[in-house]
Length: 234
Length: 233
Image 1 (cartoon, rainbow over the protein chains, first blue to last red):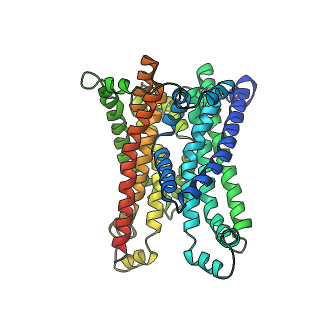
Image 2: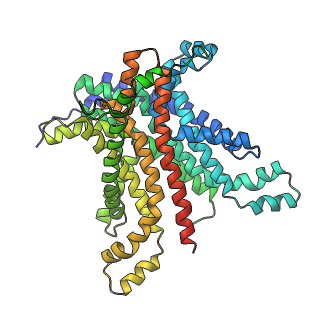
Image 3: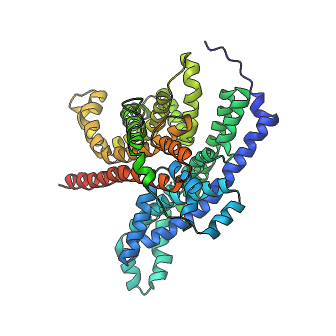
């Protein structure tokens, strides 16, 4: 058997506990910023993808395919190490005046996730039969009103589960920010391990925190699904 | 734009990007990336198949722990899984484990959990009547699964498997964290050595991954169209 004496007090109190808590705080901040920005950007890309003007549609498609098919880690490195040559000086100066590691990670997470969100939103809207729009229009609704009252309420129902999934993915992916020195949860777990050699305890603590996070989000989504979107389904 | 881009650094290091120090040293760069992805993909195919079948077991003592394991793995970041392997494997085996093995194990466990969901959905997509018909012709439940359900289910799963392979190619970049010299690691090495061309280097690396992944994504879309067309006849 393994000779290993567990010491859970390391991760439940004292300095190392505080490290993990501060890591969780950064993870939550990064996820919150990423989720809000990725949703807005994803919505915009989805609308552009459905544009009737071909060049706009092509640009949106190229954006989507490029960022979906490259690793997030490489994108993080690009924004962190390589963006200064392609961004205007004003933007660079602003970035350098902020927490640059955090900003680079947030930008990468936002852009990467927005590409997935855009596809989820688009397929949600496209899954509503065309006839619904035609019927709404012939009943006298304007295009925008048809969208507002007929198409979107149905599309939202279909889109919410995959969107929540993307939010969860973003929260988990935020762990990659440790590679450029953002002190989020995984980074702190690693720190605790290298200071105490208590890897089992440190990684268990971080794993449990991630699991609790995803269980909470999933449970909230189930509740939303039951109460708001499908109140009449048994 | 502050400075012009200069891609000479890519041309100078092209062999290193592609195969690392091979044949004078270990395989690296894109070659190692593909090696990690292919080996993990094959292993996770079988891992996913086994987990998927177990998660559908009628025996609750098997089903519940397996589902718990699958959901736990899906609930944590891949990086965390790799760190677990990094420090658990040597502790369990009592000797040092090569980093590449650590990464392959991490990728395999993580991807198997996702593959099991594809397998599960693929099996559940086959009408129940098929199993009933198979069993009423005298096949045992496992024979019905092996000869009737799986062959049909697996065909429907192929596009999802290809998509999962694309994720796997992207995920091999995390091997960077434990110092395996795959494409991303080689890129940061060259970046540290040359100092002046980070933009060029990371655009190039992103480009290489893009070409590879986009090819597979397009292939999976083509397959999807073809398989649905076949089904409709």
